[in-house]
Length: 456
Image 1: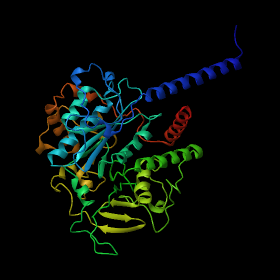
Image 2: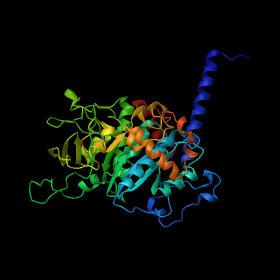
Image 3: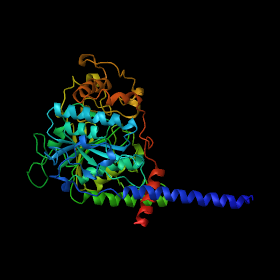
Image 4: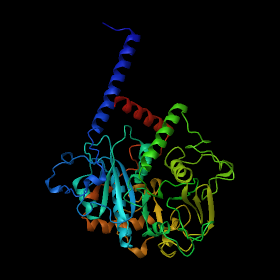
């Protein structure tokens, strides 16, 4: 018997709703199995030997620091932190980031950095594995890179991936954490940034009320970029107990507002109206009449939150804008022209092949001391134009991409990665979440959080 058209549509609609609910329930049930374990509870426990593991699924789930041989706790008050999110061990898209972390670790250690190196790992909700492969975990352990596993949010997207950067605030065993995007390569040790935020130097200024010297830089450090006042690819935060929870409250409040309003409020931003003479500045000077509006790229995501958290919530930050530094304490600031001119970790001769290392300031620290491979310029992508089969000699290197491959060949030999890295040429420029955060992603995240809280 043929059903009326209206009744058929009703049946299809109900079936689709039930299917959608079942899928969401499956993801949430899968996530609820994660063992919530703090980093401190792992200390002293033996690491798991990859020899006895046949599949990744046999290993226990981990949230927090993974116990690793000789790496059960921090050995430095400072750390560099990278993020790999949306990892699916059956697809090679994450391997470029994995190899870049190894290359960066080699550079930092070879230039005598004393800081720990941490990689935050978040698996894809679609992955059948809940950890990196035993081989990859072994490589990171041999490289003395600490692994910090993150739980999976109810709705993964490029937006949620961007917000996971702030997990460094939960690493309270460190005094400072230098977050670097997975496609950022340092040219040398940037430990001087930690040191300048901790100790007074010859160029230090004095407090207005006394003669006690203060550090050159504040405990939180952000970098302005071409069209935004805070770059989400490289920044330093000072983790303190309770800060991560406070930041999560700010994020959830903003998500609910966007869910209700369908847009981001460029006047109030994350919770502060910018009033003249206060204004934000970029290295490109493109803010113009919008210098009091929250109107830059990434304003509703990591780059807006970073600016709000350091400048208006914590009220303790150094904002590096090209050759100038704004040091903020409370509501007062001091502008220092050329403050970092005499600092840095490499000579200008070294950066000649890497002109415009970052943001067009090849002669300014810290911009000149790292390269952010944005977009399709990542050396592990075919679109970068680099000959992946070439064995580069240092004297012939002309670009940062070629320098990356020069060092990657050393990494290949050190960890016998020839077979493991055979997939490198198949890496495509995608995370599976899109190329940038959108308001739609924010609203989807807010709905998913609300749905999960109702189930709980």
